[in-house]
Image (cartoon, rainbow, N blue to C red; front, side, top):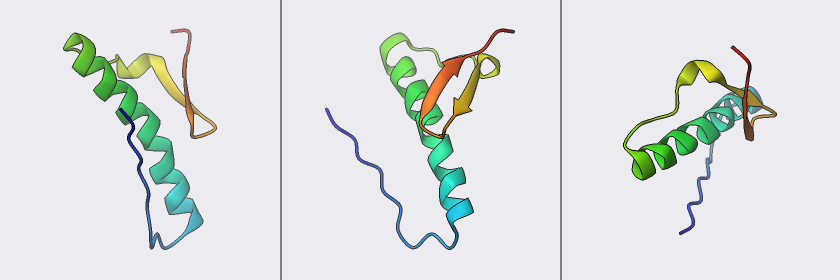
Amino acid sequence: MKLTVSHTNVPTREMLDGIAQGWPTLLANLKSYLETGTTLPSEVWQMQNGTELAATES
């Protein structure tokens, strides 16, 4: 399965960057929910470079 997300007519680059940073988290949580029935704990994930999720130490 392949999912492509694209945004058009976004007013500023800053807004596009903000939108793009949210997608990896949303999609990782959706994948986790579909596979296990639970989402990822939000406090242990942070965005890096707007494209990757990385676990952080609590």
